[in-house]
Image (cartoon, rainbow, N blue to C red):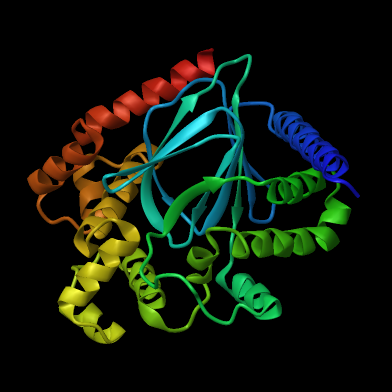
Length: 320
């Protein structure tokens, strides 16, 4: 085979891959748009969340579980600490630790709504796939940041599209979803962010201890933070806990707890109609003025004004 013939074959292969990527992206848009016809988020299969938005959004505060996030149409930005992560249909976002984050849909319209999916990643399943693939330990840094954006390659995109197809076939989903999910995890493990994903399942090093610290803070967010006790339970020094916790989450343990408290207070006021003082008490604040200052610092306005603004925004969206 001469060099010219080989060159032609390479170009043909590249063209076929580009056509497949284009077709898969178009199918992903069509299937998510059909599955979720109104703005909002729905979990249509276990661990698979689909989202739609017809307008660019305000910054939203929430906790992101370990997940793969893929955008079919539009774009989004996630703020973690002082770092910003923007992604679009050509990129995916991977989160490997539960993190309080601020996210904002940047590009969306009624004609071309923002469409996305989020697949939860269970540490036990990641560990099982790692074992089968022979990835016994992490080859990357043990304290890498637990969120990142990377290019979405053709093989990972193909697996994601096959996963979304199962929304229309619940009977097939019971059998095929676990298999495709394992394939997606394998693609991630063998991709450029594999070392980060391995942090979900490794049993040693700082990553697993920080994951345990995150879980403890999530469970006991309304209790006083005893940083010395937490460090002792994890077998770390106080300074070591602060350093590695911030390396993974971009926040100190105290900042992390504060965000969890304020997000839960916001949910209580908006969803359960609690006043600011009651919500503050429920999430662990004993000083209402302190709560009001920290709430305004995070969300930009005092608690009740923020809740009123959110309710007006929801009503306006419903009226449209």
